[in-house]
Image 1 (cartoon, rainbow, N blue to C red):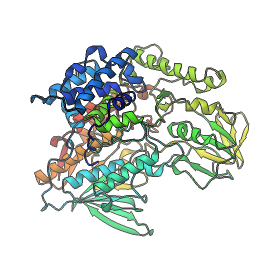
Image 2: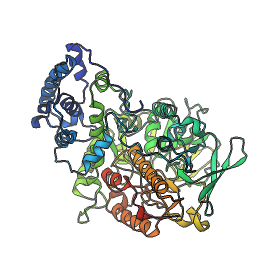
Image 3: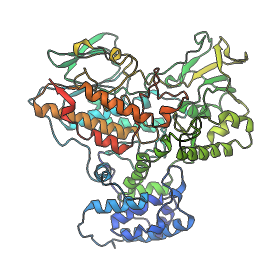
Length: 639
């Protein structure tokens, strides 16, 4: 898995090939076979898929297109199996990329995308590995806070560059959110072909959208394979970090597994704690009065037996939409308290296993996994971003923000109307009133409607007034009795670095400097905090435009560039210039106000208590990749 799993030789007979093709995702297999055979005639315009969107079977290819594509692919696979593919004369791979991308997207691909895709789709190398190594004579080490997805990635890149590092991890194992969130039904909502490291692709994912345990195993295996685990101090927490201006180093106070205190020093600090690691409990009166078991979904109490119990669930966000269907068949009565209904995106394969034919093709056809990933990548690059863009002349901003957004709303509304056609009482409760993408949308394969229609499930939309020793009281005075309360109420996403104390130059406290309104240049560096870097920092969350792993790879590449600036320039530290940071934040703020999540008044974790969007990146993936590819020395002051 170090770069990509080795492609296996094709040994299936003709019948086996035909059977495998029945499970193929054709819009990606045609480009893969065209590239491996050199036969670009496979990319006939008449076979071009009609809709590059998730959840649309075969990209909208008609049955006739699918039949013709399978016939062509069958002959191409036979030729590849039988060694009848003629050797191809050398020619620029960029030309093939352009032609394939044009066929897949239906539009000329901007030249800016070519180097990004060459890097992203590298077949036999790690396109983002540092091409330099630190001089061993330079005394410089890095501390990483967190051994989740981003922390593991940072460790891999530091190791490749020969930079000593230590990871401080508060948990007993790696994995971050996939270690902590063990609630029933937990799974990723980005396809695993995209929610995985570009340099460590798996072609044998068991599901299209992997459950928590599979993802945890993936990150554990990466940590083991790349020798990261031996650098981790588990069950240890950073309580504070302070920059020493005299030595240009960071001094960290640690709480050890035994409860004692220890000091650790390094020249740079990478905070990889993320945004979604501290559960948020709702400010409901009487929350401590409840006599039975209660817990947040991110701290699931597996010792509590829910079988036959009266269970109250507060919240219907992304996590709740996963665990509610999982526990509904087990409990006696399930009362779901909904404040704001989410928009559901239909994804029929959300819980599906990858069919055997598709799995075989991914492991036997060169480049197939890469082009499958590209399909997902391209949709995420620009995909739904136009549908989240505000048209200031649009007449109904409370419902939708543009014609494209309104069309998306109609499609999603039609899905809900179809799901709840037999239950108009529920339809009235689950239909959102706000523009799509104003808050996190939830993937669904029909299980949400099936769950809410169960006889033992009750959806309550009255506001909660208080919690008593025996249940939940709503604003209408009704007490809903409960034996167990589960909070699916999200995280303290805007409270970055909580509960650590981080002190920079001039004894600046980062939380005091932010004053409840966190910001960072590129989401990575903060003025007055030299050699301090954040991963999944302010304004690096994505809503409709990408995978957080892609963002983390960009961020780590930028950090490695910053370290290279230090080493090659003979500097001890770099500090983001205030004017650069402020101009960037103004640019981000303006752009977020051109997106649904910026202008909508619906409650969402994307905004902080001051009403500013501190979470989301408002542009496409290309823009962030471009900005983080190499740091600009002039953006920093050097010490």
